[in-house]
Length: 88
Image: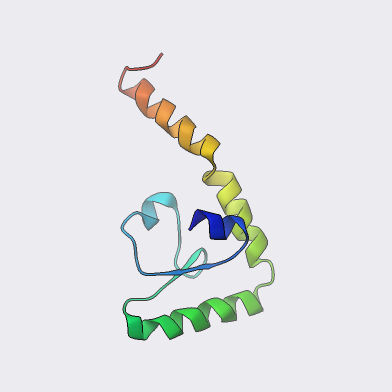
């Protein structure tokens, strides 16, 4: 997901339990389908959004660069280690 969004591309996917935790929002960052029969609807919605919102790609990339880089990940690990008293 991160790689596609970093390239400015929307993601079409089934719902994942960690999406809320990482800040992905339906219709803004990801386009979700609930079954195989629902995939065409999700694709259509993604294509319509890209067509109607030419700035979407730039916003997707900025979202990833702002919240989901390796630097963000390692800082989160260090923060958790500090909270656990394993790092000063």
